[in-house]
Length: 267
Image (cartoon, rainbow, N blue to C red; front, side):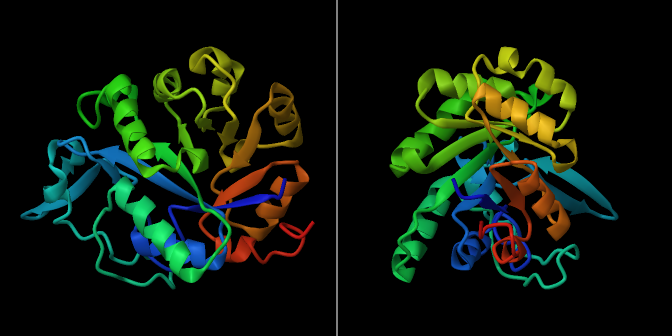
């Protein structure tokens, strides 16, 4: 299996994260996997956004407003195309938070028009926190069913992976679609000691934070039957270290670097 380069929230070095432009640019770069984040609107649409809220100005203050309290029509009124200072070459654009269904349609059409034969894989991160059930998103069973609805309607189940830090989402989704590809995101290394119990199965992927990774961990997870993709790997030396450890791939803000880094994808 070729070492996999996943574009984290799209090609963020070029366009603002989680926008249609960022995803299409990642495809143009030659990425075979785009990673994106999912939240829910009040009218139960699956929206692509990293945070389930926006910050609104009220006088001299900023007030946080949850997307789960807004319809998608209301969410689409907020521009999300301002360039981030963290990416000096990122271009400001006019953009709104897209629907997941729209991402599927636009990226697939972009690939068709470009005449690209390689199919795109969509790695979907469901943003979910137990303490925010009913506040920032529905409870796991409903949340999972909404995401699976969009996946099924897209006809792309065979090219979709569903990942989350929240094992409850993975359990709920797998009960409905056991044949889908699942991934557990890991930040706290203590999770690894009991993740098979919390998920109820061994996910196809276990994806730890880059500084949690070493060869021993990768060997152990491979022995359980899970592939390993680290996040978020942005420095060339860290990218090469991940391959040395035997990982199956990386999630990176800089696929334009990773895809052309000698020794990473060419053997």
